[in-house]
Image (cartoon, rainbow, N blue to C red; front, side, top):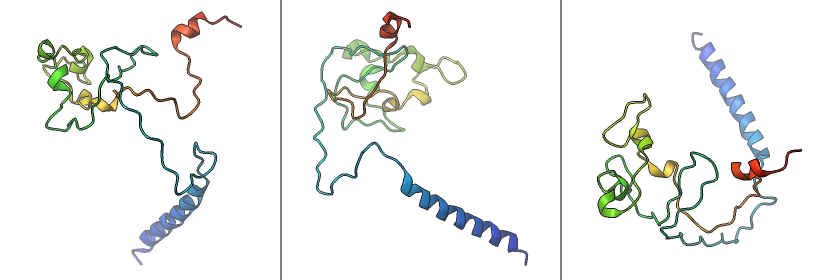
Length: 151
């Protein structure tokens, strides 16, 4: 009878899991209807490969990547991005240097190399594509907001 408490806990988990599984059928999505089985997704547009920098919509927005990064290795042992954007490589590559904020750890200590928490570039930076938003967006950048008439 020592396992009665354990049996009750397992039973409670099973009942809770069934309730959660049933409620997942009511999850809403961005689609109005389910997609047809044979519908092909739209083709991805090519990357914008230019040296022009896109305007940022808000302060501290990570800059977009102005070139294709498919096949770039960014792993624990190697970061292809740093072969051009590291402080020591920018003279040769003429690429913009990684922001100095990427050399500061979580305790505010300045490091000699990129901080591990800033090492995986695609967590914040994405390649530019000429795509339209998939979902309507009402975002207004700060400059537009400041020039709007007050009500």
